[in-house]
Length: 157
Image (cartoon, rainbow, N blue to C red; front, side, top):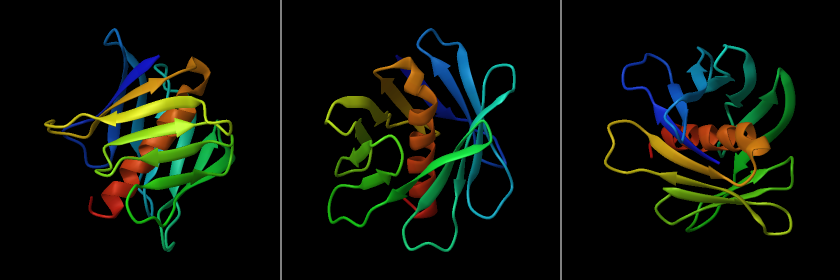
């Protein structure tokens, strides 16, 4: 399953449209006013599916993840020298980026690829392709992509 994650050009707060391969909208993401990033994922009927909320006053970026209003875990950037690595404290997944911080691979505890997040360059707004192995993991992968994008934004990258 592939999703196209595209930030809206004109928006006061972070907002994104998430498209399916056929061009139809799969999800919308709306930023909400808060300390740090707070991004709400909704389906096409406007029902909240998930949320990513940045914890402020941490040494490295850290985000709480919510599914349908219930906290399910957090994702935190780890201190590394070359390639960015994020630790997800639920699901047993590992997130590792490339040297330029444009592409990320998500693997499960046994090393099997769950998804690949690739940034498209030469775009006016942040645009990512999410290549997800299992459709049931789409909201989790989307929350990870949102957290990575927000972490890069917070660090000025």
